[in-house]
Every structure is written in structure tokens, then in C-alpha cells.
Amino acid sequence: ERVPVLDFRGVRLVTVSLPAGSSRARAAMLTRLPPDVLPPFHPISLMVGDFNLAPTPEDGWYGREKSTWTKQYERQAFYDLWASCRLRDLGLNEPWSATFERMNNGKLTAFRCDLALADESIWRWVDYVHDLRNAGKTDHSGILVRRIAS
Image (cartoon, rainbow, N blue to C red; front, side):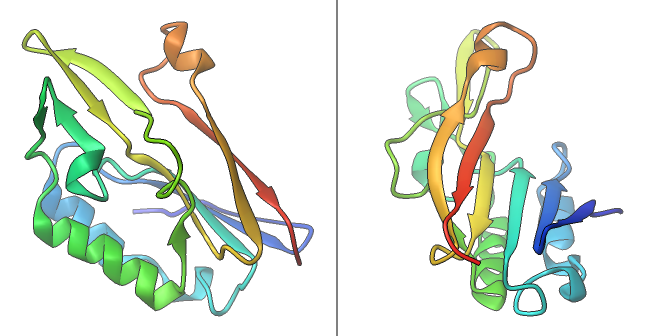
């Protein structure tokens, strides 16, 4: 598995796309991210992408019910990544918004699974960009964040 990394003007951008089809594969990939690409080695890192999991039970819905798609062990791997890298989910305290929506067996599946993880002293949340998803070009939303310090 590859984890694309971009270094630009002192910022390390780590992009993530966890496997959609397997909870175990998502959890395993979260525990195998190369430590040399993440904080504290690169303190101005920003990790963004499609994590294909709901970080909290309230972040995944199947119709009117909370989804059981995300397993507790993969959430734990996600939380362990936060702790080991001293990162925060920048969208966690923002108004809830689905970043993925798709009809599945007649029910709307809605998740907040496209995430931005970063040090809050360096990065600030801006907003989700739903334009492409709403236009039917993809079933995922984009994320805007802003660098506030170096």
C-alpha cells in the first residue's frame, strides 16, 4: 500500500484512501502508516482523505438508524493514530455534514468519512465542499482547511 505524501513550502500533506470493502484492512492500514511521514517528525503535517469509516457512531447513518459499518476496532486504530501523531479531526466540532451519500437498498447511506487530521495550533477548519457531490460527479465531498501558523 502506498501513502501519497506531498512536501510543499514546509508543509507535509499526507493523503489517505482506506479500503472501502474491509474493516480489518482499514484498521490494519491505520496501524501501518509509516511513522516517518507523520508528526512529530513533520510538525506541519496535514492528513486528509477518504478514511471510509465513521469516526464516531453519530458519523454514519443508514436510513434513520446509526450505521454498523464501522467496527469498534477500526475506530480504536483511528483514535490511536490521533494520539500517536498528536492530531485532531478538524471537522469534529463543526456542524455535522455528510461527506459521502449514496442510496443503498432504498435507504440513504450518509457518512462523515472524508476527514482532515492536523494540529489545531497550525490548521483551522474552513468547510466541506459539496459542489461536485451535489452535481453527481462523485459521491464524496471535498474539504477546505487553512494554515494559520508555521
